[in-house]
Length: 387
Ligand SMILES: Cc1ncc(COP(=O)(O)O)c(C=O)c1O
Image 1 (cartoon, helix red, strand yellow):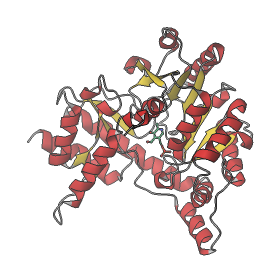
Image 2 (cartoon, rainbow, N blue to C red):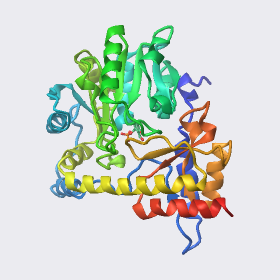
Image 3 (cartoon, rainbow, N blue to C red):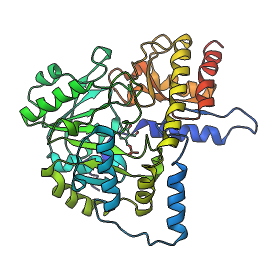
Image 4 (cartoon, rainbow, N blue to C red):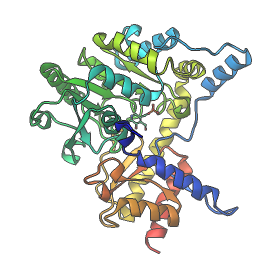
């Protein structure tokens, strides 16, 4: 029987690490120290209290939860547009906002609307694996730009100029996952202008906006290009991974194409989750408190990991990840992560998930779990590595 080419999409390895960590946690004897969960970018905090209260009130009132318009609740789209005015000083027409099933649901819509089968879409490596895996499943071709600390793990105009043939698209993420590094606003502006000049569609993943640590300012690609597609989500700053709400800020020419795709592929994002997301946008005090906990965890790890033997830790300007070299400890990140989980009870993601070529010498730690767990990690690692 025929199996489609989409079936050859590679796995998203972190999901396998989650499964292994869940199994190990379930098998722990009573009273044993728990697993420190550092493998996934899932805030330990859950949706903000005001947002949960809004959800409970809507459910308590038995508000009908139906399909919404494909692009989402008009009030949420207006609220997101207001966020662009408040956070970036940008005037955005709510008609350009498409509410999606997480950023994950936004990618196939954006890629299908912007590109054709066979089109080449460039991105920095290391990279968030689903960019390449979704493009591959859709018959498009990811083009990897090998990046390192000299460009803050971000693409440069020189790298783009060197591509022959020129790609049809470019995905950027600032802050990026796994390195957490950012493009300076002037670099993003230059990349956006280069893309416009050469007819290259820019897709800017801004999911970690709101979570930057002061070294580089946050800027949206929407400020620099009328043709860029911006992706964002309630999963990270708003701490709502499981609610599955994200959005696209679309250029005019892609609004109707994406709407037609969304109508057919998803109908709409879940109604209750959209109501909750709208309320979350007014829970700033709680969200800023979450952010200060990430900052404390980041400081503890940046302080403690080098003494454990981790090297070349990327300059994490934002997000909640540390991309760490392990070459003093191992040359096989998959085996190292498995041993670390089995013996130290710490789950982290092997670098090969993000960079098949160089990732065997890297590990990604996520530090959005509970602060006490994050602060305990260096001590546990030291004890394990010296045993
Ligand atoms: C860079 C990046 N983009 C997109 C996503 C997907 O997020 P969502 O939960 O909104 O689907 C993630 C999730 O970790 C991510 O790290």
